[in-house]
Structure formats: C-alpha cells, structure tokens
Image (cartoon, rainbow, N blue to C red; front, top):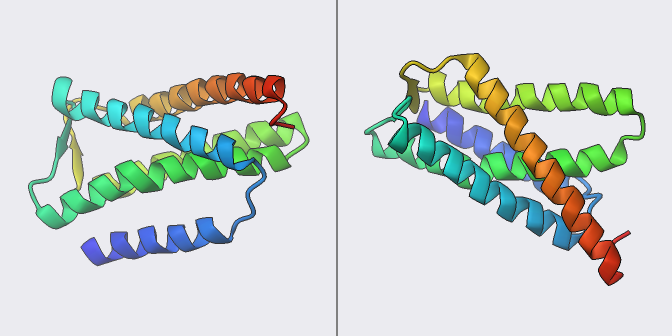
Amino acid sequence: MFLILLNIIILFFITFSIVKKRLGLLENLFIFMVQELLITSYFAVLYINLKVWEITNSIKLFIIFRLSEFLVIPLLYVMYFNLLAAIQSRFTKSLFTITYIAILYGVEFLLVQGKVIRYNGWDFWHSLLSIAFVLLISSILQFCFRRVLRKEGIGR
C-alpha cells in the first residue's frame, strides 16, 4: 500500500508541474502558504486535540501522511485556484468546485483505506463540510490578497 500511495504522490507532482498556471507567482505562493497553515492546523486539531482521527504508528505510512499534509493537499488547492481562473461560466465554476471537493475528499478516503488514518466518531460528511469550509476561507483570503496586489499595481 505504501508504494501505491507513493506512486500516486509522484504522479500528482508530475501532473502539477505540467499544468499551466493561470495565477501569478505571488498568488500561487500565497495560496500555498495559506493552505499550509490551514491544513496543518486542521489536521492537528482533529488528531491531537479532538482525537477524532488516529494516525498510524507505521513509519512508512506516517511519511505518506506527512507528504499528503504538507505537499499534496496544499498543491491540490493551488491547482484548483489556477484551474478555476480559466473557467468563465458561474455554473461551470460551481460544478468544478463540487468536483474538486470530491477529489480532495478522495485523497482523505485513500488515507483512510490505506490505514494511514482511522476515524473515531468522524463521518465522511464532516470531512466534506470541513473541506468546503477551508475552500471558502481560502477563496476569501485569495480575493483579499488579489485586491491588495491590484492596489499595489502588481496584479491583474
């Protein structure tokens, strides 16, 4: 299972490097840093404070958990915002957002199925709601950052 998850992570990085980025470097870095803060805080609260998640004791699987927490999930959010900038229609943006929430939940589902994390009194809809909330916070912060860039004459 370790090799499968590691191969998926490597495949994701290859895909991320190929996809054309629509946002500027500063926006991409800002989104990545915000995601690092939000995701690591979110995971820490769930498995340290609330104890609704239990992380594996296996070193290999723990490395997979950390890679997904620090790299895969934040880069998925960066990719989401870059792809969202290319979409024009509000309806298509809504469908894309719902699809991307499902993809982000799919990453978590892989971690659960791979026995990297285990739920303790946590349901799948809690995760979907949390992912949507993180996405909303990220969108608001990105919008505010974009306004600051425009005021400074850097952004579009």
